Amino acid sequence: MHDLQASLAKHCRRLHAAERSEMIIINIGLMISKLARDEVLQKKGGGEPEPLYSLWRDDDETSEKLKTTDMKKIRKDLQASIKELSTEIESARECIASQSTELLFNNDVVMVHSLATSKTMHAFLTHANKSGRKHRVIDIVDEEDQLETAPDFVTPIQLYEVASKMPETSKVVLVAAAYFPDGSCLVPAGGHQIALLAKRHCVPVYVLAPFYKLCPFFMTDPDALHTFRSNPLPFELSATSAGLVDSLHPAFDCLQSDLVTLFVSNTSCIIPSHVNRLKEDYYHSQDIADY
Image 1 (spheres, rainbow, N blue to C red):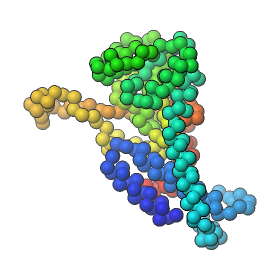
Image 2 (cartoon, rainbow, N blue to C red):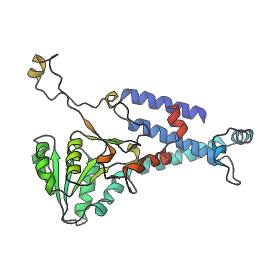
Image 3 (cartoon, rainbow, N blue to C red):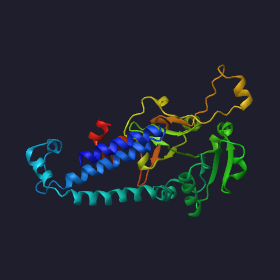
């Protein structure tokens, strides 16, 4: 089992090195490592519940039980657990979409962002629309060509129009690229401006956040990620201004916890101050410390 965990950590580091902006790779690896630890813990034997300190104390009795444990049985159960995790990840979008009827009501004016690029956001709004909710959706688009390709049930606007539309908005819905134990999260670029305007007008901000996007590490240095999209300047202008102008085109904005009202996860809605408690459900403290 130690070799398995070492191998998982090695592969996670290698994959993350290839895709530095994909923090979900680390999340999935650490989740599988916790599943492996749980399978070993369950095979230690029955009896009365042990004190909490014995969960990490490597005494002789525990070591002896592990030596006689059938590793084939553990491997079989671990494979079944991984399949269950995979199924839960695949059904995350449907579970989040089903909660739209509990958050969106008739006569709501809902402002959303990144509808064209987020299947989770699209499923969330489509489910509410099919359930008979009579609300108006304002979609903030990044490019002008998305104004014509927007779904029928939305009213597309551009980012500079958000300030004029926010007074009539009742709810804001964003989608998280990742969220962290302190209640902060990464959202597509432009989300920070939208959230600040929503806070000024006392409009609640809901962030769609599947459980596998919960990162167990605090993001102390956002610049360590490759969070920039391609250069938006024309080629001629870029060539003539090389070395003189830095054109920043960020892919994500970081929202602090005080700008988020609720995280909409697979099974429930979570306030930002309770996000830190979710780490124990999906990650093991020893795996986090080792990584």
